[in-house]
Image (cartoon, rainbow, N blue to C red; front, side, top):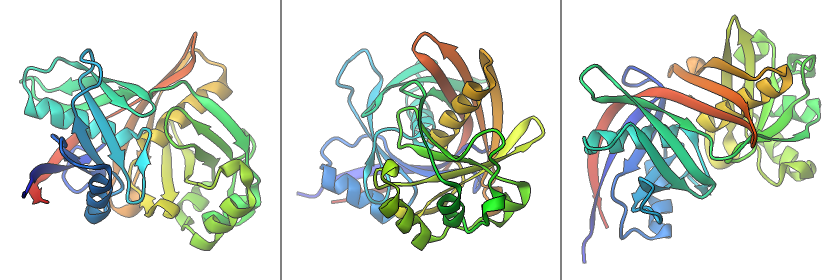
Length: 297
C-alpha cells in the first residue's frame, strides 16, 4: 500500500531566504518507521530533519524526533525552533507557548509573532541545565580545525566540553584570524575521537571569538556528515551558559553570528540565567519558509 507524507523546508535563524540553517519538517509522521525516518533524513541531506508525532502526554504540544544524516539526536536547537514555527503556521489556534517532547526532555517554546499575529520565529529553552565536561588538550583540537596551536585562546578557558540536553560540544575560543582561516580536518577528527576517551567517540567543534558585545562562531561536525553548520542552537545554548558560568553573573543575553563564512549568515539570540537547577539557557531566531513537497513510500 502506497503511503504519502508531506514535508516543508525552511531556513532558521534568518529573516531572509537562503540564509540561516536549512531544516526539513514532516508535520505528521504517523506511520513512518525509525528506519524510514533515518533514510529520509539521509536522502534530504540536511544537517537535521524533524518528524512530528502526537505527544505521549496530552499536556504537551507534540513529540518531535530529530535525525541528522546518520543518527537520531536527543535535542537540537534549530530543529526545535523551526518545527515550532511550522506547527504555529499550520495551526492558528496554538497559543504562544508550546511544549515539545524530545528524547532529552521537554523543550519549552515561546513563539514570536508579527503585528498581525503570524508566527515569525521562536525562542526555545534547552531541555536540561548546563553540564560542563572535560577540558581538552589544545593541540588535537587545533588540528581538527586546521589551525596552529596559537590560534586557540586559553586566557579565559581551555577547550571545554559542555552540553544542556544535546550532544556535547567542544567550546573553543579562537583568534579572529583563526576563526576566518579554520577548515575541518577529517583525519584529525578521527584521530581525536580515537585517542581522547573523554570525547566518547564523537566530536563537534564550536569555535567562537568576541566581536564587540556579540560573538562570531563556526561549527564543524564532519563525523556526522556536517562539514560546517551555518547555525547551531544546541551549541549556542551551552556556550551562553558556559560563559555565564565563567562570569559569575546572575543572567546574560548574547547575540551569536554564525554562518557568515558559508554565505548563510545567521543570528542566534541567546539568554542564560542561574536557577536552583543550575544554569539554564535559551536560543531564539526567526524563520523563513522555502519549499513544500511530499514523498510516497
